[in-house]
Image (tube, rainbow, N blue to C red; front, side, top):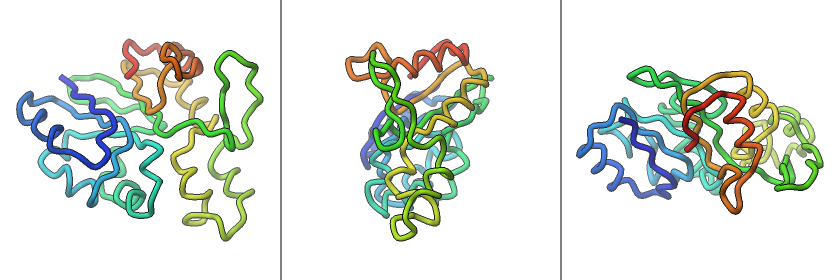
Length: 189
């Protein structure tokens, strides 16, 4: 069993209780984690079975950013990769959100194309004083870039987890449906 948990926004008691009650093989957090302390500390009882993707609010403050990106659990971030979980399930992750200043695949309208294909290209065109850690502005560490989507589209997985909603949602994105089909996933969360 895999326990999927969306948008805890700094509250983890219910996740820890559910993990203790159901003893899942894995716990997957779906972004907007906003841990009040380093993620590995907050999730200590379940850190060995927890995977995650980041959400847009995980870059709202330097504290949120540091508690997610600088933590020892960073290698458990599923963003842009496929990981085989216990039991053989392959889970792929796409963290973050679409932003018009990077790439916003419009719902039903022709895609105007991306302004930046990847974080490196974005950083090169970001004024030095606006960069975070030598890269793009901090908030764009949680932006979705086309190169990440293209990379995932060439992989296969059983499950795709995203922070953004897929196309069937009223504010979702059809490109996530296309990505799930390309990856031959059986479940999109």
